[in-house]
Amino acid sequence: MGVVFTSTIKIDDTGKWYIEIEDAIDEDDVRVEACFDLDEYEKKIEEMGAEYGGHIDEVKWRKDENVPQVVIDELRVKMAEHREKIEEERGEPITPVAQRKN
Image 1 (spheres, rainbow, N blue to C red):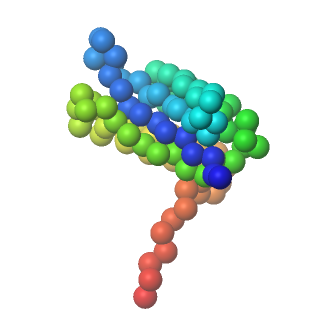
Image 2: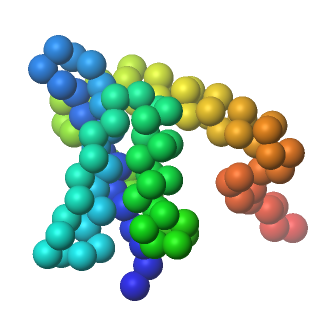
């Protein structure tokens, strides 16, 4: 069984976004963490992954129905910038790049 987390983008009562990470690998002990910025998200997902030897097979992304598209777009941009920064620090890509088939 692979290590799969679910990350759900949500909106709080004040209209601010946050990301809820769910670890339901053990159905009897579901763990949920709320993250209010991407730095906190990165830290929490690393901590949760460390419980499985640092290997996460997949993160499934979802959003609540009340999350506006502008929030999704904002998060995409922020995550791309964050990924770019990490790749620059490491000197290598952290995400697989699709290869074109001839």
